[in-house]
Image (cartoon, rainbow, N blue to C red):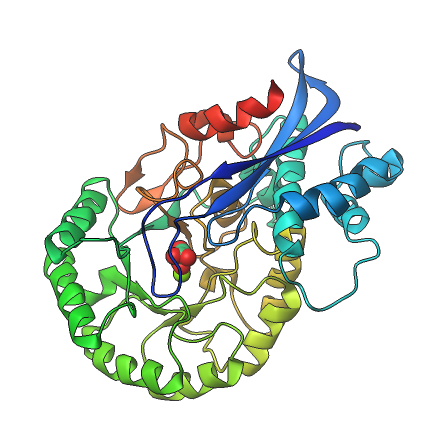
Length: 387
Ligand SMILES: O=C([O-])CC(=O)C(=O)O
Ligand SMILES: [Mg+2]
């Protein structure tokens, strides 16, 4: 199996939504196709990848460093002993001559290509990625469905509480049991009104998570934590700067409810620093590392090993990003579940068209690879890379 070409495009995912830290008016994503000479059912195997929202397209890094390193590597050095692409060897080729530390956004560029390599490998093996992962790393055992929650509740110009609750009602009507909304972008009293309106709809605090997107300093995180505590929310997400581990440890001594974070930590080493120094609690807190943003699944496997060594179950992991890649990983490696964006970040958010959410859970289709071809809006973008 040889890589014969790699192509990338920059796709817009801009919208007027905002969280407490950024708006998405200029947001973009990279989409790549890794074209191989392996023929399955009369057609060459092509793997696809993209980066999830929150970080911009990586055209420069892809074109200058990571695509050429794959293309100029000895083709044999990228293969396993069956002659198929070996994601770990591809990863090593991409990271040649990269120093440790300072992960920056190269982890996003590598993550996009890593996703495409896993897609190509699973297609070459003619099976779904979740099944490949369960067989390789999980004793053949996969979950039959993943818990998913509907993320949304963004700030939007002119959006009032009625529009917020109407959005959340749509998610419940789609089959979700848990929803997530943004907080921290307006005064505490205004956010508490938004939260209480959504709670009146969903019924219990356990069905609502809130996301600060790293906006607060420690005094603000503590003040808001005191106000949120009595609601018994599903989780309090990114209350603090994601790299301020000591502040997390301080908050965890005061906030008894669930803290969720990790979507902006991009390496096993950063995840390890969180686990070592962030005071998070393996019996309740939630880790949201997103494989598409953080060097891909090769690195995510290292992160899972590190977590196990520190007493954390993979069930405490619920990746950020709402994409099919992480959904395959959640099912095949028995994580705690996956994020979902039923309404925002189209076409990259959301799952295969014929996989409805039933009672807050989604089953995986039995399709080779990650399953992008079964998501019409996404496939319409990806197939432009084949023209
Ligand atoms: O608004 C964003 O950047 C996305 C986000 O935090 C999430 O999905 O948890
Ligand atoms: Mg978040």
